[in-house]
Figure 1 (cartoon, rainbow, N blue to C red):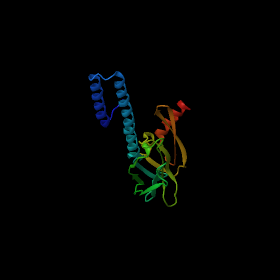
Figure 2 (figure 1 turned 90 degrees about the horizontal axis):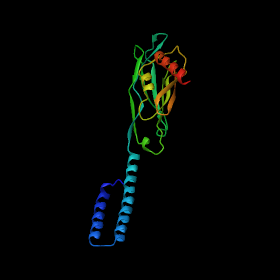
Figure 3 (figure 1 turned 45 degrees about the vertical axis):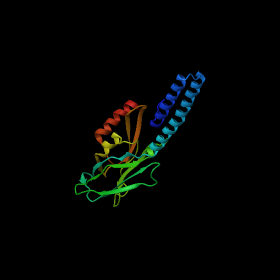
Figure 4 (figure 1 turned 90 degrees about the vertical axis):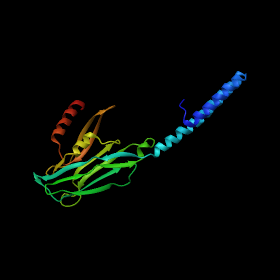
Length: 218
């Protein structure tokens, strides 16, 4: 039995009492009662000790990686699209009631970026809690309004590498149509997981790897 600091003192005192009664010739039944009493006291106080620890952990906040850094560019048939206002949003299921947005604008070469987002919360420590975050990047205004550069749902407290590497090279051609792209995550304990990304962006080399994985897993 694991003994917390408070119970260790009680344990030592009870042990001294048991030894003392033995030396004084007290019957074995008395020693037995002393041992039982010690066990009951330690059981109750240990339960309280660990319960308090569990409650503390449940409200302790941790850092959840909800959106990796984004680096990308916008073109239309090879021509860079400057001054296009974009918005990025995320919604943490069970934590946020609405999507939280931030904004950026493409430069003269059509390039843009968004910083990484870390959300500090106690949600992952709650019983049966699941960490799921809806992510979106789309055009905020103008002729391309609401065109999706990125739409996905991520899971877990850390960035998924398969999604992060795509967001680090989010190069989008507005001549492309929005399509749903399947990404197979292999490195998990219970088989494979299939992620979905809705976007006008393409990743030719990464998509070739996905074709190979579909041939393997179906």
